[in-house]
Length: 255
Image (cartoon, rainbow, N blue to C red):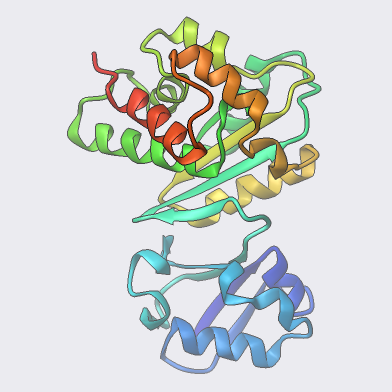
């Protein structure tokens, strides 16, 4: 027998049940999702494209996808993605969340409390005008994770590394000035880690505390002009080429 834990929309789809039993000693993720669909009262909430299926804390997308085999002794959790910013980078689950504005004047305290409540994820937050689309964050994070793997980070903490490379500077004070959160300004929260359930719980916490608005992360002419001035590059070049310059600027930072 396999016990399936349900969180978020997946829980709602099964009538509010926190878990459900699958009467088999083993099954693939695909078989489990078919089983859930057949027992769901709201099947639309179980769209496979909007689900994370974690097996023993690892996203099945980083294992064998729908063919991943689950046994009775495994812990399986099904979570509905609450917005379009969540994706997998290998075994790392990443969530990118746009927030309409930050009301809290104590920015340092805000981040400290969020990190204390979400110890199983790495968390960073920046002003939204620093982000030139979700792909900007993803590509910078790939650089950060590779730098950590090769032990060539320019910062002591991976969250600080992300801030520095998004701001394209090796100076923490300058990075905070360029990209740090400000009261009344739109924001981007970035959470990442190898525990997909923890990442989704963080998303739920942000959703409960802030007005989400992923549109603040989109590339705009105003952002482009700001970032172009910072990087000393032309704002007239195409967006995809402009993004390449931003990523290259982040990649060349060294100790």
